[in-house]
Length: 291
Image 1 (cartoon, rainbow, N blue to C red):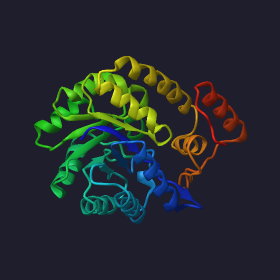
Image 2 (tube, rainbow, N blue to C red):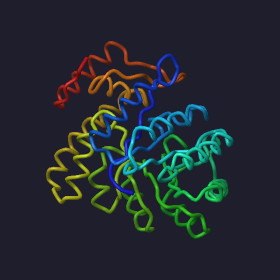
Image 3 (tube, rainbow, N blue to C red):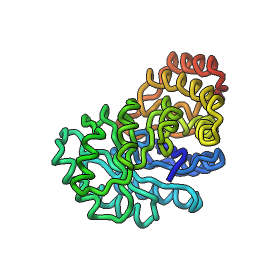
Image 4 (tube, helix red, strand yellow):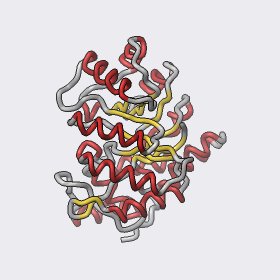
């Protein structure tokens, strides 16, 4: 597995899954030549979705892509039965791999993480990727911890690294597992040191640019990739000033087409002043807004 995986935004309207919006969005991203989709992650509100909503998202994505596109399903959450259902549905929908955050809210120690991953790997034959996002989970799965897990027999195929720390990316690559960078500001350096690709939130709104960074890098056109990466970095810095994950949904609406919102209780659209400011910021970077 390699390339650009879109951390798919999952739109809601009146707190119900906006299926038509999602179908249109998936088809648009396919036309932009993303390599696949990372489902039910942070941008996709995975920990907030019910088992039924998760299953319906899988239905829609699977129905609208061909077999060449990768599907990685993030299964982690707060309810064990929902996790189990998501694993079964991912297998049923012929997912490429599973990913999981560590157990959340109650900060896990090493043994908690080891037991959790052991249970997951015993339940499925699909490859398992750790989704390392310490700022949300409160636990950093460092290369040292991953090495310990591997030594203890836990079958880990790779990691989605969202630490913003290039040394952790290099450390995980040195373990011989697949590494996908989860920070849009670091796509180019991650690829240069040996990353397999990226899981990109910004590719919901600017997929053509994210795909271009990847394609230029693997072709050796580093200077062109660098120019695009710098533009994406500037957008990444702007995005960080607004509420997440709502900002990713707002960007789709401003740069691509009408789109739903996040699910309750996260709904918090931009204020009128924030929207004006964001439009000016996007214009300054050369992005044309449609609203």
